[in-house]
Image 1 (tube, one colour):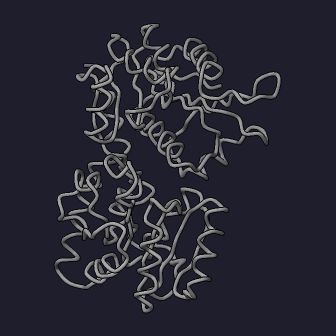
Image 2: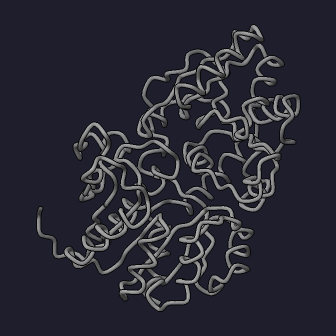
Image 3: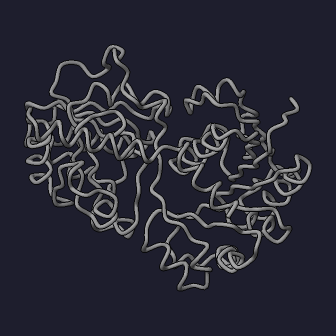
Length: 375
């Protein structure tokens, strides 16, 4: 381990190294944001069942260009998983002590309560439903009254209000959107060859759960045979379920690209004529979701179509994207037509979206939290 004169921040999440779950990618990129702010960042996580993953492999998966010091906790001695409770929190706390961490940033419930009680300045990220009944979540909310727990950061006012209603210190809660890695997603002057082929191309990048709006996308695919649709992402079982739907409907203008490393996503966006963000209104997260893909779409300078769910309308003014009704494939198809139509309106939306994305970078988000931690 190289000795660094920079202050150390311990970033912690009970995720497997290399995980491509959205919360895992988000936490890793936040850790990189802290590193870009001049901190020595130790990232403690779980060792995958197949053994440790090399830093080089992790850098490639997540598209990292700021160094992280990875520490992967193996399974328990009896082979059982550590989980995200004391089995993870205790060794992570010991590591914070050993590395003399000046700050802890955690995406977990138990560890930040422990580090706050120990007096280590602590930042914690929570996006969970306020009705979460886990006792350790209730303990975390109570810990926000400790001097050591400097900020609980979440992604929507409705979550902040819900946490405060359950006893969290309202003045310790900060609401910020999920962020974007500008160095990864900013469109280069000369983009690489597009992986999409001839357009017009409509791209959705993310998981293929129904509540993400996949049924509406498939309806739009059927209604717009002249547009090529691309779904980039999804666990293998979700890809196969979606493929079965595509084949049953006889759709030929859609390609399922499957799960890709985070670093592989940008060229799909740079080659797109429109990017789709159609979450359903029927899922509780419609009140609070703040998808990373929104910032990525905007940073890539691609026109955006989004459903007008409350969570997205909170962060977007209407100048950055074309809104449509959720859970309505015909409305989505019409919005796609509007978004890709050449002209000043399209170019203005793309420019406004890019300006907003520049305010949403992981580097800026980390800097804001560090300022709050020091206050």
